[in-house]
Image (cartoon, rainbow, N blue to C red; front, side):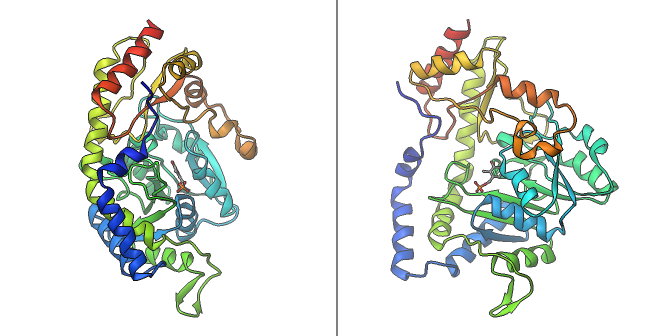
Amino acid sequence: MQIPLLDLKRQYETIKDEIDAAIAGVIDRSQFIGGETVERFEHNFAQYLNVKHVVSCGNGTDALEIALKALGVQKGDEVIVPAYTWVATANAVVNVGANPVFCDVDPTSYCMDFSLLESLITPKTKAIIPVHLYGHPADMKAILEIAKANNLKVLEDCAQAHAAEIQGAKVGTFGDAAIFSFFPTKNLGALGDGGAIVTNDAAIARSCFVERNQGQEMKHVHLTNGRNSRLDTLQAAVLDKKLPHLDSWTAKRIQVAQWYDSHLTLESIKKPQVLEGNKHVYHLYVIQTPKRDALKAYLSEKGVSSLIHYPKPLTALDVFQPQGQIKFPIVNKLSENILSIPMFPELSLDEVVYICDQIQQFLA
Ligand SMILES: *Cc1c(COP(=O)(O)O)cnc(C)c1O
């Protein structure tokens, strides 16, 4: 058997007619930037999340930068980010002129450990970016309490957590604003790049709207320098067709995770945990074993793809060295032991059983 980490072709085959028709429709109308199709997707995504405003843009990294600016983050400010996340979260902070301050993660959820936050806050701290890593929600209740007490903004990074929930409310609806990525491999992915900022605050939405469009409030009225960052009409049309499938895809991811949970029985394998009250959407299924590197090589021989998300914590990257001040025991240990095994909605029970058998044979 050959089992990829993710198989986008299989998903496409299940909705080929809808996607092909959506693309043909855009070409037929030949409006390739903006227009009703983009507005319709923004509206539908807002309804899906139960949030007032969605401002789409070119990708998730742009969304982070645009949102940070809209939240008033400026040169010299500090922004607290988890030490374990995709590098984009911290790069965006640097690219608006601010300094990322890293927070170690919770050993169960792998999200920002809120109990460390207070020790990281200084007079320069302006905002916190919790990341719902691998699809598990960060502890928003605790983070929001600390943010409120210290007058800090909260920007949720939901790039890996479309449809994840805390007590029945979707992630992306808790902070002052949130960002999503529609990179093809994300739980809701386009056929190229895409991103969005979501918020219930009309003024923040307005600032994002202006920033993504050359600082224009309306044609030729420029409020700031802004930038150009747009969700293509083609991508919006595709995302609008995929959005109604997101709940069933998410349910299938959860089913696949349950299959893994029940077939990976060896004590030495640490499986993903879900903290009470949370809906984990398994962007990735990440296990831990001290024999990680050897297991990865063995799986590869057996036709099973796996990857390490991520080989190094951000605190170990040279580009962030000036802030790598204190020790980060949890992320350092994680980076040695974690392995992402195949996870996508179309994975079959037979494949999951095969993968589990290989893992258990090697580790037994
Ligand atoms: C993918 C990702 C981003 C960035 O999204 P792009 O669309 O690739 O720019 C940001 N944060 C996290 C946690 C991500 O996984």
